[in-house]
Image 1 (cartoon, rainbow, N blue to C red):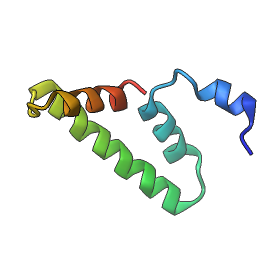
Image 2: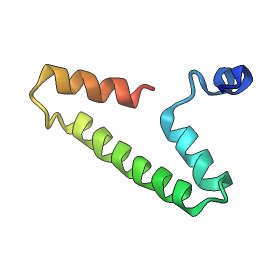
Image 3: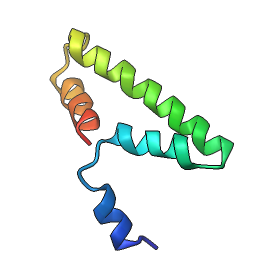
Image 4: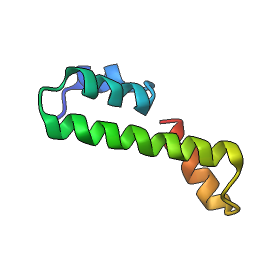
Length: 69
């Protein structure tokens, strides 16, 4: 079950901040590793977005949506 207080706390916060919190606060090594990998992936998407690697409008939109969550 979802906790409404937790959902309110995370709405509007960038995904990168939430992942950094997992890295810093989780005691579970698999969660820390997953958060690290997701942050690395976000950085790749940021670079792709900045350099305009993708020519597809759908891909650009998807990257934008991921980066603004």
